[in-house]
Length: 277
Length: 277
Image 1 (cartoon, rainbow over the protein chains, first blue to last red):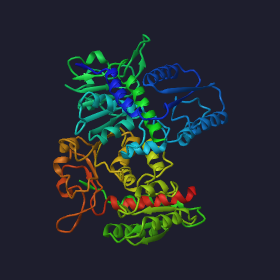
Image 2 (tube, one colour; image 1 turned 180 degrees about the horizontal axis):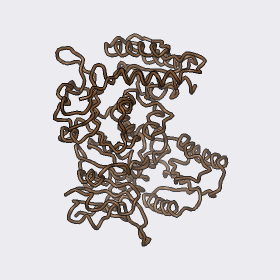
Image 3 (cartoon, chains in turn cyan, yellow; image 1 turned 60 degrees about the vertical axis):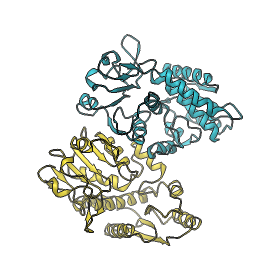
Image 4 (cartoon, rainbow over the protein chains, first blue to last red; image 1 turned 90 degrees about the horizontal axis):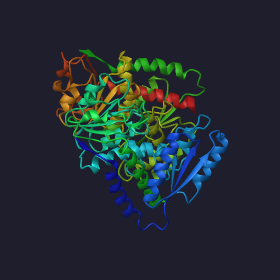
């Protein structure tokens, strides 16, 4: 079984980023908005900052107290959203309950919305309009496949998970590449059988090692989007990676797989936002 | 094989429409915008006017010459869009080439966009937010299934066709009902085999009688969205209806199937738009 590492794809994206970066008068700047100190957020932010800086980009973190009022948060958000020095905005979510996430989605400038949360970008992903921004994780899966030389044309792709961050937008991206796409979820009957029919299997469910050998057809390509912590406290994906040996043709590890590609896509989106500004 | 007629479902929708209509101070009004005299448009408009009037609703047709300039059309469109007496707007498409359809999608008031063409409504359909308007035809398929007592929970649904008017939004509507959804299209390999795996098969490809018996599994429910004219000049669907006898458990005819349900859904959307105004 081939192991598809994220680093290889990140480097491909970096090359493209460097060529798109040249000619820009100013270094693009990302604003990361974080409320509170959730370990997931802090860890994702750390990875994103590191990756963006390695791409020669600027990041400014805006950290607010977990208890910030909706009014105060809106004021701060509007200020960042309107700042002409800010090319892209990444909001770490979910936000605490007192804040109106829906308001954020509606308010964020679609041209700065580098992680594709605004209705304008959602509609563009749905309709196949490539001038918008897809959620970085969904696009990272596409990079992982195409960067490893896989054509999606006519392929049977099965996506397990239907979130707005990965499953649904990814299904649309795969469809635009002319794959035949099946979207599965917790209510799908006989999930292993449906998954075994996939030439390309993408797991984005958020359950540690749920997708084992009996979910994988002979020669399948398996992309693992999950980032979970198992009972022993170790980082792991949605896929039981070790069990796929001799069955899958290729699979992505966790850690070391899609995660790093996601932040590389974020960097690429930031550069595009700056170019379009 | 059971024959699912559109009239039965239209009557169910009419009952719901009547209860939602009561208590409104004014009769809801739909503006239909048609450019030129394409027979398809004229025929659809005639059906829509008849259906809406039978629901006790008002329709105003705005007909423009096929050669109208983009500037003149925009001016007229903005006037209709801003008219407080207009509760809903239906634009017959495609528009002639000199007119910017994309501008119409961006400009139409999402609250009056009863056929779901604006990015706001597209994003709502994608995210499962039921405050928006789905394209009427896509929603009509759901009514056809649910109105015949079919639960979609956990069902294997296959949608053949990926247009923005039916295939893609319908896939999302089916997904929100917890079906396992496969989206097929012209590049799908071995389409008959994929279709035979469906418990619910929806054809929206626009090819006369393309879906024959070998595409249909034993006991499948088949919904035909196609409206085509065959070589003898007769109206027919995407499904070779006669060939399904003894194979499908139920199917919708063309004419007499989904078409009439679509205009009933349009009526329901208009009433909801008026209620929300």
